[in-house]
Image 1 (cartoon, rainbow, N blue to C red):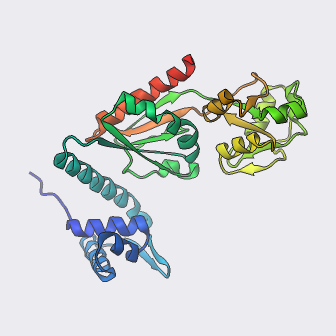
Image 2 (image 1 turned 90 degrees about the horizontal axis):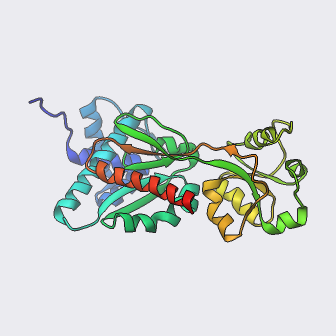
Image 3 (image 1 turned 135 degrees about the vertical axis):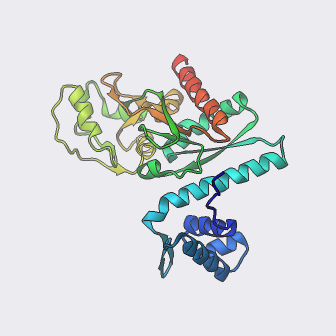
Length: 300
């Protein structure tokens, strides 16, 4: 049997906390030890690995690029040890499933449906976290399932598409009645609500409608689709929004589609989960539920 190359566990705990918090003092507070003890543990680990792990700065520390993957693996392993320990100590306690997605998907799609998952799998507790859409692909390895709007390949993970999506123009009923919209060309000259990183969506939608427009159109720009949808609800203009984020608002009457066609094909939704670890079975059950939830939406 090959001997495991394992540094002292204390050094890994200090390293994980310091890297996650980007501060030795904050790591010391979390671990209930002194700042100097954290520094000593980090030095021991750096000596063991024969390379530095952090850049020391005035306001804290920054994980060096070559140590990023090591941090993700250490964090995931410590999380698995914690989960296994809790399961052994309290065998009747709920299984923990760590799910990460963007704030817009969490707020507008996942959270309104989570109660249904609790009925589907009552022995599982979902711990939900969010990451900005620009960084979702870097969501750390401690998450059991990552829900995102593009396929992602990651070693020892499976990525499946569970929802087809499309974008359509929506506005508040008051705005539509006040402005009057009879054809897609009527959108020109009205405030077009746009989303950073998706500035070509409106030109593509107009192209599907047979209209040639500039590649850049005027209008307010928001960080997230759910912010542009909220602005549309507040009569600020027309949002080109993914159906999955505005379905509930349309059903409740807060938003109304301007036209049924054209529909701009969206990115869809994907679930990324670990292929072989202690929670893989639970993660697969969660992905099965995601498929079932989307089918329920279609049937409704």
